[in-house]
Image 1: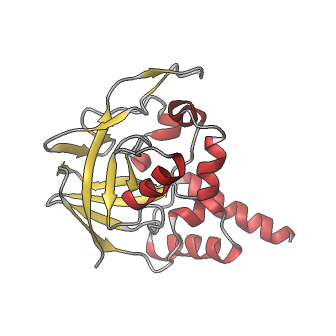
Image 2: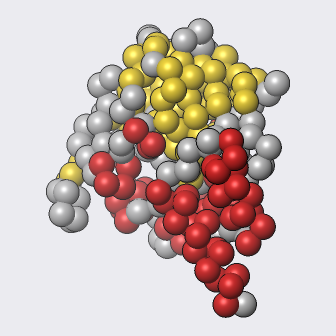
Amino acid sequence: MTTGTLLAVCRVHGLLPTKDSTGVTAIDKRPVEGPVTVHPLGLTGDIQASRKHHGGPTKAVYAYAQDDADFWSAELGREVTPGLFGENLRVSGVDASHAVIGERWSVGDQVVLEVTMPRTPCVNFARYLGERSWVRRFAEANRVGTYLSVVTKGSISAGDTIRVTDVPDHGITAAQVYAGLSEGQARSLLGAADSTGLKLTPQVRKAALQALRVASFA
C-alpha cells in the first residue's frame, strides 16, 4: 500500500478580478491551520468561481504533489508554495499527476477521495502566475495534478497520512488522460467502466471516445 503525507490544506484567500464572463477567480488558495471539513463539493470555506471548469462533485478537490512543485520551483526560480497552483491539497509520497483514474485515497481517519481526472490549465492560472506561455509550458510538462471526488466526507488536517487503498487494474493515469489516450488505453478505461462500474467523468469518457474515433480513421 502506498502511503504519503498531506503537507497542507489550502482554500481560497480572496477572489481576484478576471477578464472572463465570471468576473472573478478563486485561484488564490493558501494553507490554513487546524482541521478542515471535506464535503461532496469540496472544502468548507473554499469556493470555485467557475463551477463549469473547476467545481462540482467530480472536481471537488484538487491535489498537487510536492515533487511536481519542486520541479517547477527549479524551472521558475521561485518557490512554489502550497496553494500557489490553486490546489486544495499539497501532498508528498503520492504521485498526484500519475494517480490512476478511480484510485482511492484515505486521508486521515475519516475522509476517502477518488481520483477523477487531470487538471486543465486556464488563462486565469497563467495571469495569476505572470509567467510567459504558462499554459503551454504547464501542459508540455504534464505535471498537472489531479481532481478528486469525495467518497466519504469528514475532517482533514495538514500532517494527516494519505493511504492509497485501491488502484484499478486498468492502470490509466490522470497524466495519460491529459496527454491523449491511445486506442488501447481508451478501450481499457471504457472496458473498466462497463465491467467494474468505474465512474468516468464526462470529460474522461469524451477523451476515450475521441481516441477511438481517431484510431478508426488511422
